[in-house]
View 1 (spheres, rainbow, N blue to C red):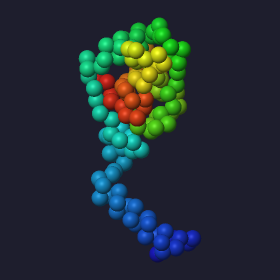
View 2 (cartoon, helix red, strand yellow):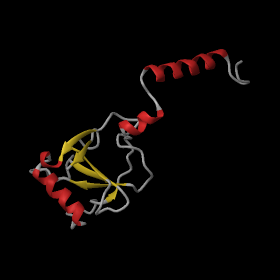
View 3 (cartoon, one colour):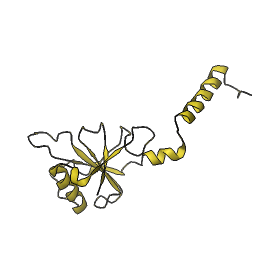
View 4 (cartoon, rainbow, N blue to C red):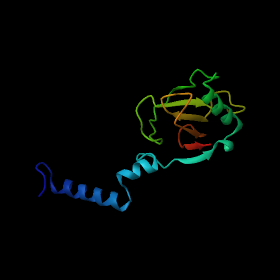
Length: 137
């Protein structure tokens, strides 16, 4: 029986959506395992593999600063929806200096957690939020 207000096209689309999700391996538990349903899976990078400026910034984050740029430590909105979805204010961004770059450049570390000097997780991007890798110690 088709719900009132639905036509046969809507019913077929709903069935196709469910079948497509099941064939692609989607399950609610997979959302948490992969990080974010909305974006690509986030890879990893070891802290020692970060550029020297990234390692220094990571140290400063855990020390609570001081930071060079006034935008360091501001809330990161995760509008790209690549990082796991969390409530506003969970993520903060920090500039990773690029030698020879006059502006802030494209490199950032974004940390998640409600204690800025003790983040739950940090992510590195070298392409201005187009992709992220979780930093592992």
